[in-house]
Length: 191
Image 1 (cartoon, helix red, strand yellow):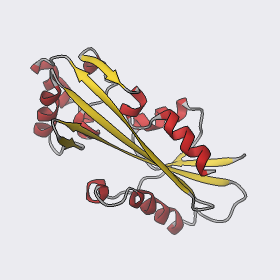
Image 2 (spheres, helix red, strand yellow; image 1 turned 90 degrees about the vertical axis):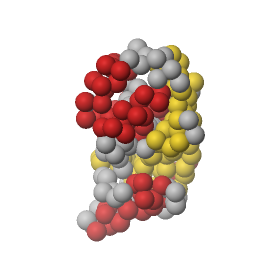
Image 3 (cartoon, one colour; image 1 turned 90 degrees about the horizontal axis):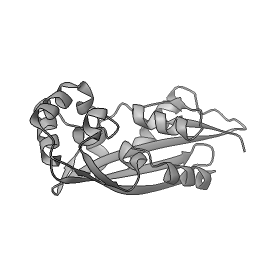
Image 4 (cartoon, rainbow, N blue to C red; image 1 turned 135 degrees about the horizontal axis):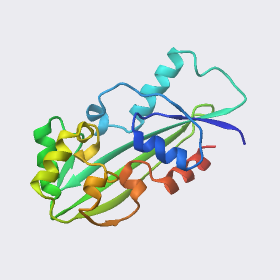
């Protein structure tokens, strides 16, 4: 079956993971404050992107099915949700909190068939256990602007932090924001 994929995310990690899955895709982001909708309905992110596609005339009838993939990731550490840090100080606090401890990562994926309206969603959880992270490593990580652009302030694939990861329970791709097996299953279910 022939279909197009639109990835509704600006995440470099999600782009890489979808490429690794063998898919070609286009990008579209919602340009909305995800924090403001997180506690309501995850479908609102997809709806915002669908609205943008309609306003641009990109949802015209076609014989080919189009799938919109949206995803969200939150980190939970010491009972607190850790979204994208709002400042370098908050990023530093987040990372210090992981030192010698652990964090849970919950990633959700929603696949919307733009032709039929069918939606399939799911989530996956992984846990990351950390060795003690030295202050100088935390300082270096915080100075990298990436810490302000990712949930929890850390990217697992960063070589600087990787050596302080004791164990990952679950899949690395779930931690990176797009669980491959879950996403593949949802794509097939949405078709």
